[in-house]
Image (cartoon, rainbow, N blue to C red; front, side, top):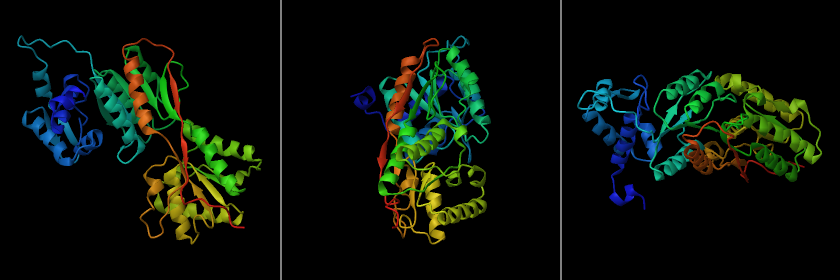
Length: 388
């Protein structure tokens, strides 16, 4: 039993301790929110009441202040006073025990929430802490900005989930040169000295293709919102679609491949119109199954199919990828449905991320590990044999 459990420290005090460590080590920016109630709930698996009590305690001590609708910020005056000794000299910077996890999206209700929870548990067992930074990248500017700030913060290491296939090597280099550990999440690092953890996306896509061909499908389409060259994970899934045809002895039809939906997803009307046009064309050319880039795209396809009067899987089968909330979003609908998909192991990803971060902290540049985690097929009710 670890020390925290032995002493029975209240949950809100654990949150306070984590935030205090983050403040004490300087792992924050005065211009960015230290946290929000929602982020604390997600990070620690606590209730809103517990998160609010922790923040109330810190606010009552003058260490933080709140901005409505934005979050909590560290008080510059309180921070400076906290780091001064009785003689007025600043204390020496301690060895940081804080690790930063940078994501381009809110991780609630996604596999990355499980990954962070697992990573945080391993770090806490080793006397360390973790903090989440959400960049909400659109053109990657925020990702670069956060990585730049982390270079000057007293963090021990960084786990970075890039928004595209580019993981900003020049920015990660500056962290590595200072012997901070770095792990890239989800995409595979092609740089020998940068560690990465990804899932077997190629193998997963091949599993889906084998599942569809074993059911008897011969005309299978591929639909993606991201061009394959933009992200290695998507490229691997696309490659699995292509190689799956070769493995099954099926002829490839370029008209069945659609990878240019990204520009339409931000406009629901345009997206729906394009999807209807796409599905109409597929049905006219005899397509009986669709392999979607991920569960979100698969869910969109199923919704449009229903609006068009197409039955899934009777008229057309649909597969996704990721086994996230989108794969089960239709379970409670009037027409219940689960999406056939590929399950990754986010808990294993989190544990591996924490292991690599701890293992490489303080080390000079060296040949790094690239971990590829196994996946498994999850057969839902969105696939069936094609109509005779």
